[in-house]
Image (tube, rainbow, N blue to C red; front, side, top):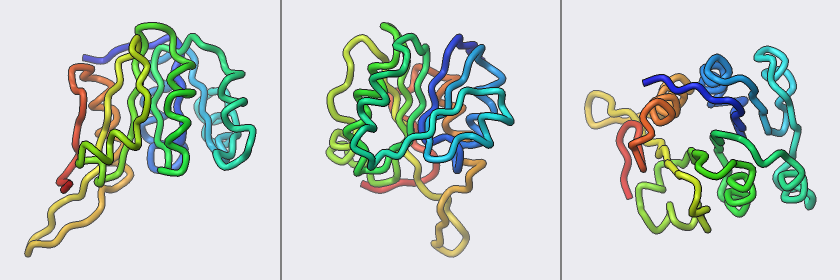
Length: 171
């Protein structure tokens, strides 16, 4: 299934999630990119760029100034910015979807709960947990940017997944 969205908000989607942002841009009418430096990718995609530094004191206020009618939000936040998960979800219209991207430690439900505080009850929240890729001889490697983006796109395409782990994970 390939959904189409009216308005999508992507937070932290200019680095490892850039390919996912490109896919999203094709499947929505309006894309807004929030990141430290979103301008170049936003220009490439015809998206709206909102530069924001999560450590700045006005970060929560800047999120509050955004429209509240997004259909989908995809967000990758560092642990220190986990408190912004709810303000990001507050930008969604009722019935919207929030896809949160987490590192492999979120395979532990307690860690996941700490990284995703205070879910909004009228929004569907999905979690994508990034694991690792097994290598021959009991080795492993972190996922590539392409594998990460493919996992996020898989979650977007399949809203039935509450949590989707890409690769191996422990927790």
